[in-house]
Image (cartoon, rainbow, N blue to C red; front, top):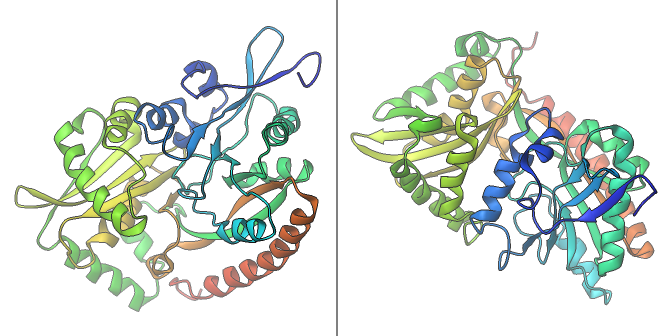
Length: 378
């Protein structure tokens, strides 16, 4: 109990929370904090026992039991699947004799896409919700709490609560009112425009590209995409984060919010990319292939996503973490944000000093990258 009017509690899972009540706190419809996405991870076994991600959503209810605020949070036994790297923090803390794990992770698991991390019926509930996260850490001996890929509009809530703020860079394509892909190409410098056209032509030369959504995505499509995903996951992370069942549940629960792009050589699918559709963005999440075709990765993951954003009048493409190679293809450097609460005061001071120096470097890098954008000089 935080006050006489508000009740803060831990739920055993997202699935234990009423779907309509949860989604009412996500009015913008961000797909990655939706009840459908998060329960698909739980019900497929992608999070839960053995995964190192134990669901621990924090909820605020009124005296009548109505859900007023929620936080998608997890007890973590490692730092995998987060894309905001704190391994050096863990090493330093453990060398000093502390135990960094478990920690509390406020996130959409395995998803480096910005979105709300505080699901609020009114802004004033941010303070008790964050206080609830701190209390969970203190009562359970957690070293810290970390909210990753927080949408910029919510960062002030964390700052007001005294959390430390961290910045990083991703590359997003921004739709500046283009009506066609050619309209986008027209704003690129001549040499860059020619390179993009050459890449698309080479990628499309010997394959057929198909887009599927909703009921058009069948189990056989998920079967072949699972093969692609496993190949990428094994190379990047050692083992894939998601189970095969997760993709079936995504299809069943998210429907038209998914666009699966497959490349076929004859009747054989050889590559694919999975995208999620939000209110004003398309999010490229998973990609893989069984055969290397020059520039096909760029075509399926970057150029097709731009086509879709223009077609659906979406404001941006978020194509995932890292990837400086996106810059020359019209993706711009933008800041992403995370927020961190550290229990130990001495460790917090060290982290605060580190973040102050890191932020300066991130801002300098963003300016440097901005000067290398492929747009015409005017």
